[in-house]
Length: 113
Image 1 (cartoon, rainbow, N blue to C red):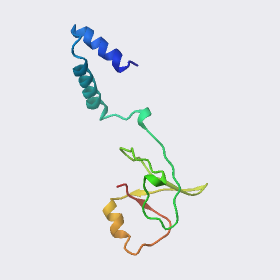
Image 2 (image 1 turned 30 degrees about the vertical axis):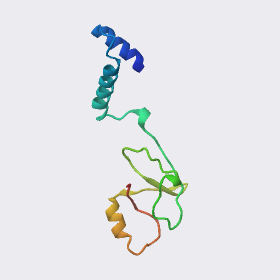
Image 3 (image 1 turned 180 degrees about the vertical axis):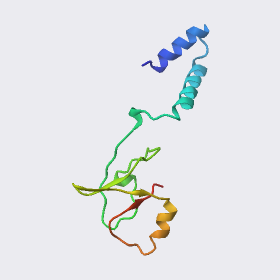
Image 4 (image 1 turned 60 degrees about the vertical axis):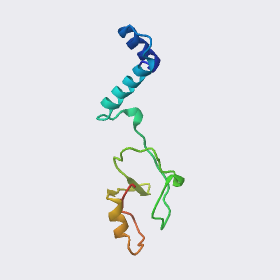
């Protein structure tokens, strides 16, 4: 895999120009941005876990929630080593409206806001 400096050097050589380093960097980054949007790459994927607390409704970065997520594939909760359930994704507004009485129990849904 080429580095940015190697790519810049090859493009400048192909163009026979040495005064376009900034413009070449911008063009390379725009091309990457254009082409990567439709694809997922193994080096951009992440798995994260965090501990839940009884009666706690919201979790944030202080609870070890990753803050650099672009997309969530699924959320699973482990009640015991053999008792895992996938949670249903809902909108944050729906979760807030459904939590009128601050009920507690086993979660079935989640929202990411």
